[in-house]
Length: 157
Image (cartoon, rainbow, N blue to C red; front, side, top):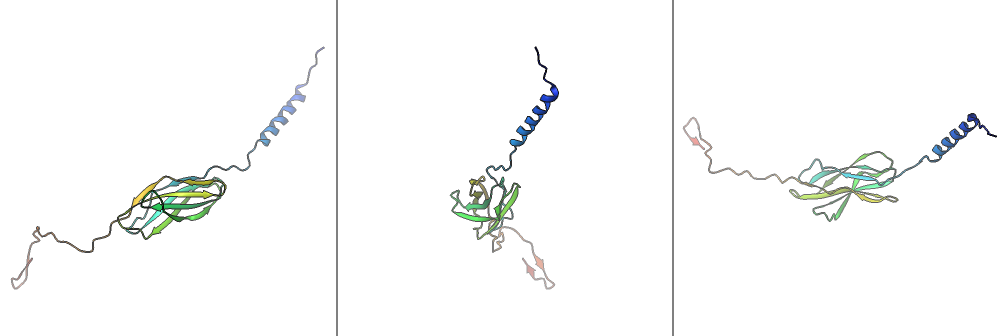
C-alpha cells in the first residue's frame, strides 16, 4: 500500500517554516568599531591652523578629539567640533588651533573614544605653519636703480 501525501498540505508548512526562519534571524541593532580618517589641515597661518577629520560612529557614542604636537609623542589634545557623536552617519570634525609657532612642523591625528568601543585613532598627518613676514626691506646695493633729475638739474638716485 502506498500513501499519497497531498502537495497542498506540505507546501504551506514549507512556506511558514521559511518565513519563521527569515524573521527570527533579523538583526536589530549592529555596532562596529568607529572609523577615524584624519584629513589635511586647512587655513594654515603663522600661529593657527584648522585640523580636519571624517569620522563615522557606527552606532556608538563617541568623543572626538585631536592629538597635536611637534613630535609624534602627542603631548597635547584639543577637542573636536562636534565633540560628541553618535549614530551611523559620516561627520566632518574640525578644530581651530591657535598659539602655534611660526615656521614649525606639527603632527596631528583624530582620536575617537567610546565607552563601549574603546579608542580608535586616525593616521598621523602633518602641516607646517607659515614663516613670519620680514619686518625690514633690504635693497640690493649691487643693482643700479637709475636716476631722476628735477627742474634745477639736481640728480637723485
